[in-house]
Image (cartoon, rainbow, N blue to C red):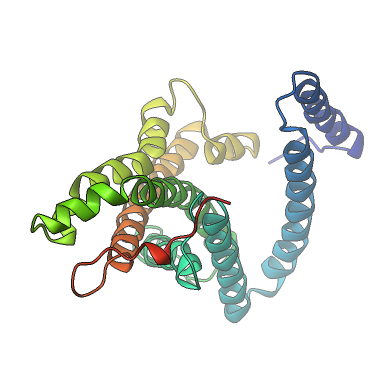
Length: 266
């Protein structure tokens, strides 16, 4: 399988497009230029580092190193989810919502794929384990972040309505039922749109990568279908888990809304 090699000049040309976009943002006063440059630099450094780490992992194939790298990825994803919340949940629980929900969803789905579907031996083969977990964490993180941000924002904006429902005798589960459905739909929409557009509007990343690497298109399609199904399941489970954690955290045993657990926008 021959893949065209990229030089530093090739990457610089592509980076120039991002710089041009940042300049346009500055010219149009969008205020996004710093975020663009920062994110581009951060992405480059992170990918270069993970490339060196993966090269070492592929050579060593040590199971405990795979676990350590997976936990680092989980911690980073949990921190990213918390950072994207407009109204952050106070304390360690704010981090635990993202990390906990993604651990339950992404790790379980990845293990199912490695042990049952692909039937990989050993299960910790880094060539399969790390890419599968990375794709699941990345996509699950988006759904969990969107749903969690929507949920905390609605709690903050509709706190008086929720308290009125509680005063009228509703339980906290009944009071937040509409909010729960709205937030779960918000978290699931991106993956639903991705599945609907795959193959017709877009060629997903894993399929494109395998084709560029020389794999037969039909085999690449099979793997992409598998990945899309796994991502959809992981995102759905993660969104449901995060919403349930947040809503339970915001009420006490006497069904009282505890807004002190939620920070103002900052």
